[in-house]
Each structure stands twice: as C-alpha cells, then as structure tokens.
Amino acid sequence: MNITANSVWTNCLKFVKDNIQPQAYKTWFEPIQAVKLTDKSLSVQVPSKFFYEWLEEHYVKLLKVALRKELGEDAKLVYIIKMENTFGNTEPFTEKIPSSNNNPTNSQNVTTSINKKIPQLRNPFIIPGIQNVKIESQLNPNYTFENFLEGDSNRLARNAGIAVSNKPGGTSFNPLLIFGGVGLGKTHLAHSIGIDIKEKYPERTVLYITAEKFTQQYIEAIKKNNRNDFIHFYQIIDVLIVDDVQFLSGKSGTQDVFFHIFNHLHQNGKQVILTSDKAPVDMQDIELRLLSRFKWGLSAELQNPDFETRVSILNNKLYRDGVTMSEEVIDYVAKNIKTNVRELEGAIISLIAQASFNRKEITISLAKEIVEKFVKNTKREVSIDYIQKTVSDYFQMEVSTLQSKTRKRHIVQARQLAMFFAKKFTKASLASIGSQIGKRDHATVLHACKTVDNLSSTDKQFRKYVEDLGKKLSI
Image 1 (cartoon, rainbow, N blue to C red):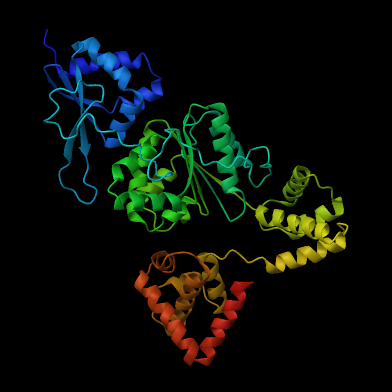
Image 2 (tube, rainbow, N blue to C red; image 1 turned 120 degrees about the vertical axis):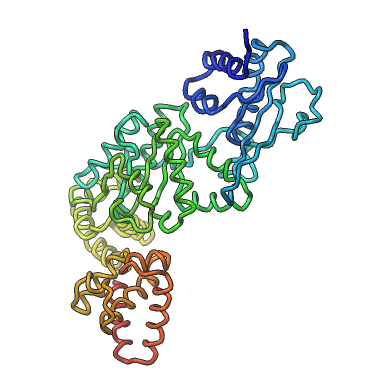
C-alpha cells in the first residue's frame, strides 16, 4: 500500500472529526493541507502563525493521538506556515515549525526550536497578548431587548434582530444592517442581538467592535507586521457586530481587509451585524464591492419615534428607575422632545435631577422650564446633506446647482461655504466632504476653506453670509 502525506492526513482528519465539534473542525482543520511525508514526519501547511499557535494550544494532544495511530510512536508533525507579505505582492515565504509534542531529536535543521515557548495568541483587544484564550464579547449588559421598546419606528429592525438572535447565520438577514440617525437606538439594538445570542448559544463567539476601533487595530497590526494574525482573529468569530460602519469611508486599506473578513464569515455561515447612520445607497467613499455585500441581507431603518412610542419609552425609563410622574408631565415631555430617544431620556433625567436636588415636586411648570432649556441647549446633528440644503436655500438655488461644475462666481462661493461649514460642523474627512459636495477632491475643499477665511476678513458682504449661515447651522 502506497502511504502518502494526503492519505495519512485524511485518516487523521477522520479521527479528529469524530472527537471535536463540527464548527471547530471546519474552522481549524479544513484549511490545513498535507504537504510532505518523510519517514515518520508529516508536514502540514497552515495559513498563519495564529493557526499554529491555536492548534498547539488546543488540539496538540488530539493531533498526537491521531498521528501516532497512523505512523506509530515515533510520529512527528511539522507545521509549514505560509506567511504573506503585507506590504507588497511578492511571493509568499514559508517557515517550518515542529509540533511541541515531537521528540526533540533531529531538530537542528528546522527554523524554530521545539523547546521554544509558544507565543501567546495575539488578540487585538488585549496587548501584548491574551493570557486566556476566551474572547470577551465587549457587549453592554444593559442594552437588552427588554428595554428596547417596540414601535412603528423600529418594528422591522427589532423583529429582524430577534430573528437573527434565534438563528444566527441561518436566516436571509445576513448581514443585518441597522441604519438611522443619531440617538435612535442602533447601538442598543446591536448589543441586544449579541446578548440574546450569547444566552441562547453560549458556545458561540460573539464580538462587538466599533468601525473606528477596528481601523485602529488594523493600523497597529500593519505597523507590527501582524496582518495575518489580525485577519485570522476576526475569522474565528461566529457573530461579528460592527458599529458605525460608515467610519470606514475613505479608508481603502481597512475596507479591503474588512471585505476579506466579511467574505470568510459569510461563506462559513457566520452572522454579521452592522450599524450605520446612512442606508447603503447613501454611503460615500465605500468600495462598491463592499456596498454590494452590505445589501446581501436586510437593511432595516430606525426612524424617529412617534408620540405613543415616546410615551412608552419615558414610562419604561421611569419604571426602571423607580420614579413616579404624572401623565400630564410625561405627555408634555413626549410632545416637545421629538428628535430621538437619547434626547428624550436625557430630558427626563434632567427633570428628575432638578426635582431631587432642589427638593421640588415634578410639576408641569417645572417640566416646561427644564424642557425649554434642554431643547434650547440641544445642538442639532448637522450632516453634510443638511449643510448643502441650508446653503442652497439661503442662496435660493437647487442643491444640484451648488454641486454642479459651473464656475459662476455666486455658485462657486456657495459651494465653498458648504465645504467650509461641512469641515466646521462634521467629523468627515476632506476627501469625504469633497466627494459629497460635487465629487471634488480634498485639495478643492482645503482651498475652499482658505478662500472663505480670506474673504471673511476682506469682504463685508461675504462675512455676513458666513455669519447668517453660521447662525442657521448652529440652531
């Protein structure tokens, strides 16, 4: 009988498959390839050092038994790690590492000594390395479905979230993209889904991460030449929740790595949950191939809560805090705070605090006083779209005219003012601002801001434009 590396490894896999969970087998053993069989030594190729470290940490005894069944007591296992070049397209190189369960004979010719301590599994959340292989979910236990009240404004998103939590990765809602304005509960709902999944499927790895933190981790991984480890860390997650995915806008490198992670998770039946302040169709500077994947599942919008929902939210908040308040006061607050849930709860907390600190009864007059101050001091969430609409209305032109290629002086100035205020009132990058205001580049935006500063100090009429628009956008 002709014994080959493939036949030995195939038999080993049959034994392994009978002794571990199917998901673990699929994640950790299917990617491994048999490469060479020399005497009693089997060489297998693994995707990265991350894989090698995890196998040695969790499955080395199982591998030892499987291999000895096939090759006898003197069996040896050698990992060949295929390392990719992070910064270019040159050919990958390999590194040979023997298993820690091999006999320490004839090891002089391999790259890494078998007596060398296995390095800690790299985890982007704990630096320099995790001491425990358990991955913390980063979920907020206070954000549950129980305190996320259902209404017409959020029914679709909430019910879709419940469906996903009942069968993560097994519904057509993959990915589930939850989008809507500030303070409407996107983050709360995302956490609720994750918490519910952890309760129903405790063996699954759930991870919540903001897109900003994901980007920072990726940059750090590039600096340390740990790109492989970064990718494989995210590829072992069963349920990945990424908050504020619009933050990836304009970051081509991060988008590229997220694209590959997303593909791996989706193809392996893992669940992806995303939140964004915009629908996919309105996202700027996100690669088309990534946008198309955002649209694969369900995009569910969270809208401003209606009056009945606002009343329910206030009653629920008061009940949880053990505070009683008259229906008249609750109705007044609900009627006058219409923007979002965050401001609604903020107003009621301010009202309770004032009554408590000053030992006043919570009356309708106190409610009017607090709500008036609260609304007055609440800053409008200004978007680039809103800025363009405000500037266009001020100069009595269409937004399409403001974005056009025309070089007419009054239109150019209006466009420059829109860019100026977009830089002042939003956190968007210059490239993103330019892209959204007539598909210009970042240099055009920079020039526009300098022009507005110069004209404000030399042109009285132009300075009035800046002051008028500044007041409108600061309301």
